[in-house]
Image (cartoon, rainbow, N blue to C red):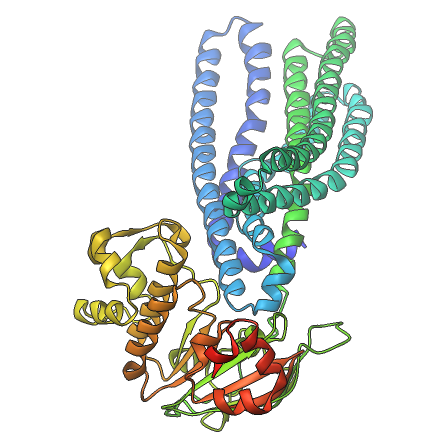
Length: 576
């Protein structure tokens, strides 16, 4: 999975990768050549007292060292650029792909997991690429070259490599085998912490209102402790692995000196060769140790790559049309024909047999008990998810055949939980139409009954915090309505968008809204009867099916479900 992800996203950087490989090879070969020169300097210069040979050989060593340093610095610089570019590209790919998800895929993964996959998981892959380009490319060259040069110095002493290298490989294999499941568990626990944090930060008022601070602290402490247990397990393995590698390296040095001294004493080896052999052994072991470091990170990167690929390989259930219709002039006539919506694996559909028509210049309202499918029905129009049966038509064209930009450009959606972005009042109002003038913004605010409190906040430049947390729920709803008005769409979708308003503000807003939406199609979902009683047509939903349609007076006379909803909120006299 990791290799597949890297193959795709490293393709644009093939030239830079080639440059890194060349630079690493040059610096590795320079590293391998230096001990051999050092052996000659000792045996033919120091031992014989040949000063000119010492100076000449020392000069060559300095020149090779300079080349080695320059190549190493250049390799790290280019490798870092490639790794950082890879991280940027993978994050962009995940973000762009998530933007295509419908509400179903968003619910499947969840926001905390998607955030972790886009940040922490990408960082793990990026770190492995960085270390691979700066350390791992040179490691196999150092091992193979070191073995060759060590055998060249002394064949008999090289037999130690047959013991040391397999021992190190065995230590590495055990460490990787034990760490892989731990790293997968660690990423899952990071997801859990992100989820709990988001819930606690978003629901801080509820937590305090119900005096659940202690419970939430314990809940977070539990998730935090779960992550700590796994992290300690990884730390223990690392704490055992590195000292084991160092022990093998030090014992190898002692063995080389022990057996090498015997070889020198018998005349089969020179002092310079022993020094060079010890240097090669250390280079081999250091290269293996770098591999140990890398292979400790690789399992976690593989897990992260799997999680990233899981997102990238998930296709949205809202699929753009193969040949989208983009040249149609939409007026806003909305129609649903025998629409059904069912979640995957569900026994019963959320919506079934829905027939509905909403035309420009008229207001169509949808009302029903909680869980009757009102919000789901509204979400089918902008394709937040697609109907599993029947068709949703705009001006006679199935929304699945329309170009998504054309469809979305015609819709002004005010969701049940209006969301404001960090910035200013003006930047939020211009979100759907950046070229809107200040006059248009203030007009929209006047219609949405929001102009007064916006002036008190400081005007269009007043700051809005992330999610609009520095304004009340009613103010947030009015700003969201103003944002939809600024866009001037052909279809307005109000999903219980007046619930946080008092009755006077609700009435004033609807009265001011009527002339603004005179030529548009208006579809309102509401729980409050006062909000929809003046609608041209009211659709009554019950358990996902239409059980009534008509005006307020008609439904009061003929529809028992509607009467029950109305009389649960107002008296018989007020309803009449």
